Image (cartoon, rainbow, N blue to C red; front, side, top):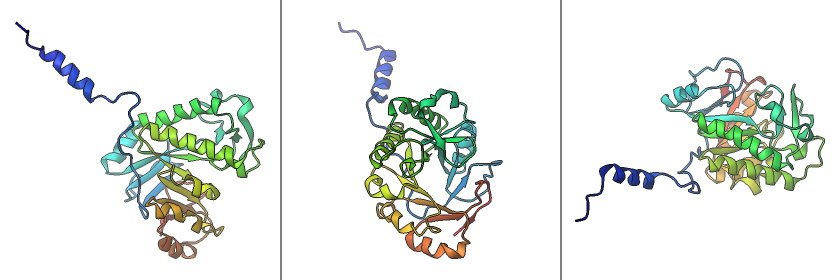
Length: 259
């Protein structure tokens, strides 16, 4: 007589069937729509009182509990990381070999990275994005994504930048996270399909905001900040272009003025 299938074994099989295989793709990821309101704060004590659905905060400086509290308030949370420059004040700074460190990028303690060295940088960036995922973030804002247009100390090309930016996007997507293209306006036509939103600084000041139209046309938010122009100089155009625009101070503390 065939013995009844043990209940415990049945449960094990059911659970195994529900588990994601290592090569399965993550579920649908968040993709903010044009015009989504946001707050960007990278310094000072985090002010969670701003009534917006999206917060963009430093991935290293904030804990899983902070992300959970923002989620409890029905906010999505973006993890700010520098992926194109080395920062001497980060806890993993010692893991970057000197050979990949280039010239300073204009911020104290920061140097451009040789993004051609994906053999070195991919595991380092994967670990950083793992941190974002493990803390519960919904998305990543990778900074310094346009080194090829700067004096980095390396002969970087547009092709190098496209390859690296797509690598960063893939690392985020493989972990179920959305990812934003930071600045890098010239490569938007090639990269809009690889990224879920854009983050831009000072496109109004430099007359470049129309370059962000492909993101809006694709139904993807453009999170935009100005530092030196009064809101009266850019908000009308921002509304017309459906940008999510703020006036901020360079230190990116809690202060903001939204369009």
